[in-house]
Image 1 (tube, helix red, strand yellow):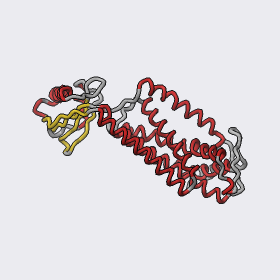
Image 2 (cartoon, one colour):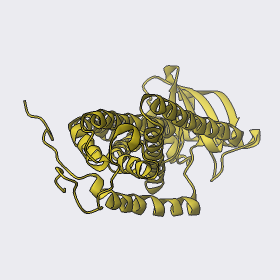
Image 3 (cartoon, helix red, strand yellow):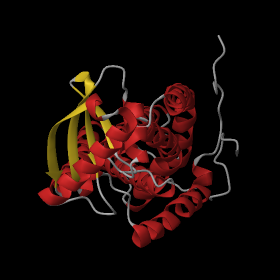
Image 4 (tube, helix red, strand yellow):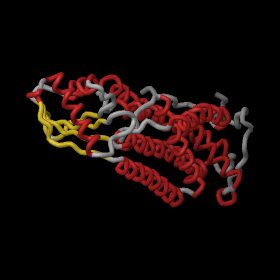
Length: 326
């Protein structure tokens, strides 16, 4: 059986400063772009109009989206609702979503005109029209932020109980790096931030935390096995020993996401983009961000007295004993 990276012996910790520079080069310009232009929120967050229609048999969501876009409602969200013949169309006029019943009615009339032009007046029936205000979007943003904070709190408690508080802080900071990088990525691609994208970001959080905890668990084991080794060497050894699992898990997930990118529809494609980038940045941070942060915390607040491990720091460009520079 062929084992990938079975004898990996790379100096990941020695490249930590290079990793910091790469992360800063990705995140800082994106933050400036976000300050200048903000995020591209979907109707679910900014407000808009919801139109539920029943169409004749044989008309799918792609045809409805083409008709609505051709009618001037660019960026409308089309979803099946109940049966294959029922659809919910979320759209907005102009740059801001409708906030009044009058504006909602104008949007509904434009949707009806677009469907009539494409399929005919007898091909659909409007079931309901609702105005969705930005207040709903604000509540959704608060709930998404609450979910992220709860995941951080649970991680801190779990790792403090199973490992040490140092591990929990390092894992949370590395995951915060992943969240920030992923949000910046959506800004670079000008992806519409919808509930689908938020769910992808929450999934990335879980993936990144899991990857980091796997490495930290190996660190804990190696701290017991190699009590005379310095902390830098133990971190490098742990990342190298878990590298086959990291690469195979990430590679298998990326293959599924690539299939979604090329074969899935427009609704699911933003989820695939965010998840694909999240797999990359989650793997990167687990190796090059989480472990160096743990090393920095160990240097500032050493736990060596309780473990009998020296918390020494190797020079950034030099490999510790037994580790080959990559």
